Length: 287
Image (cartoon, rainbow, N blue to C red):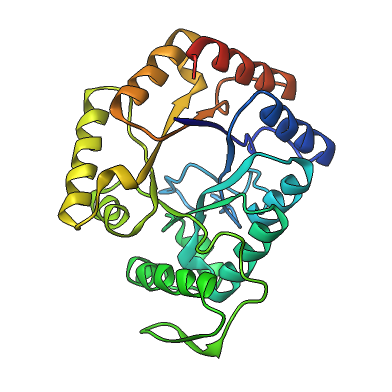
């Protein structure tokens, strides 16, 4: 099982030196990958009494492609993952180009996690339709893989037209591993059918084990071998050190191929506390 960390972007601040220090420490501690969340805009909740989203205009997010491009230059081995890029609020060909460039400049270290997102305010500001995002998403995935593997693409879909054009340079990985983040059944079924891997929200308990079994069954139903599809689980630091080893063990027993450790929301006040938590987790969990 490959063990990574979640980039603590809500809490790390804006000092580029500290951002680089965190990534280098993560790599030095033996973590295999660093996963970064994505949001372009946060909504101002003033005058929105029904707002229920977890992030607002006060939540800090570094733009994910720029961030991972910077961290690619600060590290040499660490896999760089988006978990997840909100794909339908972006132009597909531009995402393909940005991802290919990042993969080239990192030496083939990108894993692109994509998802639908939940923030209609963000979609509106970016000029994309929130209501049809699920239908467009599948076409985007098909087009991305072609753009990453073919010198010249001729593609006609419901939402996309590429008239004999292609990326140069193509990525190192052809195609770039494309994972889907999903936590409702229709989206999880889509991941089982289309994705190289699933960024799951499974919990390390009986409910999570049942969710893993459903995912495997849906993968088989789609004509795929579940053993060929990655699944990533998340250990939450805020649950307390007494839970870390047991949570990691439960995810291992469930058959996760990847694990990530999230230090956000645990009350850490300094970068050093986040890094120390990474060190202790590796020590306690044995993974």
